Image (cartoon, rainbow, N blue to C red; front, side, top):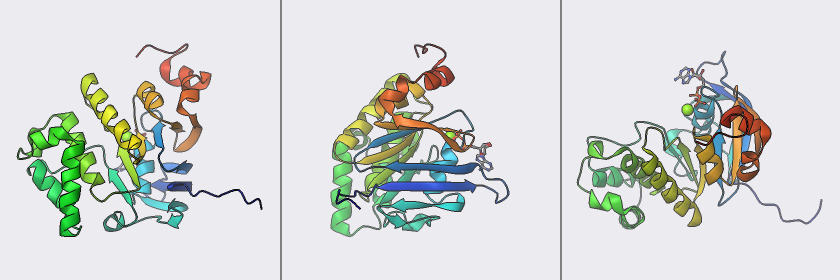
Length: 248
Ligand SMILES: Nc1ncnc2c1ncn2[C@@H]1O[C@H](COP(=O)(O)OP(=O)(O)O)[C@@H](O)[C@H]1O
Ligand SMILES: [Mg+2]
């Protein structure tokens, strides 16, 4: 063995099989890793199993084989209530905030397992990071715009200071302007030290924003690499952007 320093990825997913029915695996031997401070994106055709893959990481769908490690610790099939202590947070694509509660109530609920002083500190930090939420503090989450709602979901997920934030298409259904706003916020979070794994259906955006990108197809790894390299990869551009690369 060399004495080269070994660094453990924040997330390591090794050859997992997972799905909604034991006889019908949707994810069929997929792997990925995320290093500390990285912004990693996952792309792939509709129905490729992207959502199922990250749901499996978050313990929302059952893993029948393979393993998920967070900071080197095996968390395969983690129970939802153990996610915060395992230092991961998962924001599903929809139904990720309580629409009948105010922004403040959503945040207080999200921080309810923290010691009181820590909860207050984290909520103040959320408002500082997301000034829009502060402005609408006492509005019901249901009246927020799509982008604001995604930001609330992200802010809530960050309250427990997770080492890894897992996001499923936070840009879905948003106007281009809002997508831009959401992505700018996420980039700021990464710059401040948050590590992100994000599914994104807009290939161009995913390759532009990511440090590295995984392409999943049929529940398996298809291609992966530095996002910038994939943006120039002929196979990727042929499949997803049209030959020669489509403009948008
Ligand atoms: N709740 C569910 N129950 C059963 N099958 C599902 C469920 N959600 C998704 N699937 C199936 O799993 C496959 C992959 O879906 P999904 O992971 O959502 O793909 P993607 O996010 O890449 O579009 C699809 O064939 C889909 O029909
Ligand atoms: Mg999906």
